[in-house]
Image (cartoon, rainbow, N blue to C red; front, top):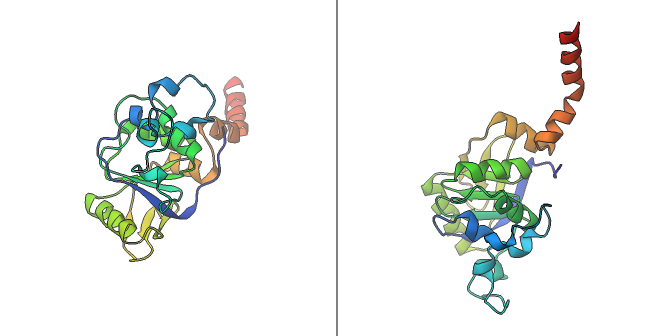
Length: 198
């Protein structure tokens, strides 16, 4: 499933300074019945966002109108727990294109990269700078530059570099998932196969 190309994202950010946020908190197990990557955003952080009567919890950050944007800034060890790819689907479907944390669970990181959500891992010190900037001014914008692999707090100019697998980077720049990538090089694959048959 192709997704929008990711090059440079400049956006406000939503702060979620909680450590050890696991995939069951991101998308509870009872919402995993669907097989398409649609509709999961409605239930992102469902048990944190809503009361038992489905009314929004005013204390939760996604229900706070002063915070918005396409970047979610999480605490350390974001995406731990089960390997459900639905967690990444829920984040993408809600509208986030980037998650920033000082540490990601490996499977969650890869699930995000497969569907067009960029996980940007920063140092704990830079993570704290981001949170402080957002709390000081919720309109603070963060720039995520994928070609240069940098994240910048525009209000202060503070910047850090981040790592990403070169194959996944190329796919995100082109809006490819793994199947799209194979289809894109179909001609090369067929040419190589034909040479083997000679």
